[in-house]
Amino acid sequence: MKLAELLNGTLLGDAGIRVWKSRYGNYFYYKLSAKDKMSLLWYKKLFQKFGINCYISQDNKISETSALGFYMNKYSFLLNLREKWYSKINGKTIKLVPSDLRLTPKTLLFWYLGDGCLVRRKKDKNRVPPIVLATNCFSKRI
Image (cartoon, rainbow, N blue to C red; front, side):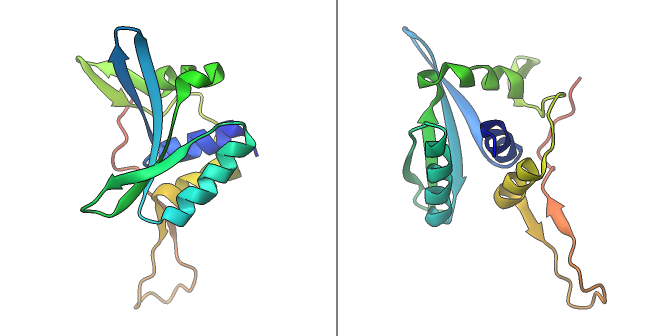
């Protein structure tokens, strides 16, 4: 597995990269939220295999979600990810799927784990349920 597959797959899902501006420069922060804390512990182990130290914290008390995160500035090879995945359009920063994104089986796996589902219809005679990958929040690149 490659780090790009893990990052791109989770960014296709609900993960995001935030920017905090300070007088010392911009800080880039990767964040992946989930209701299942055990899944975040699994992701944490995967990131640690690439030498990325991340932590898990409570994200939202009401929805009972946790978040895995790490500051990307510690890892210079990750700094171009924000530029690759986000563009400013009409003064607003929008997350866009990179035009050079390569969909590998592992990238699709991480996308499915983060933002996919199996659709099971009780009255459907097809015994193989379709896999659905959420794309409803994607913006069209102009």
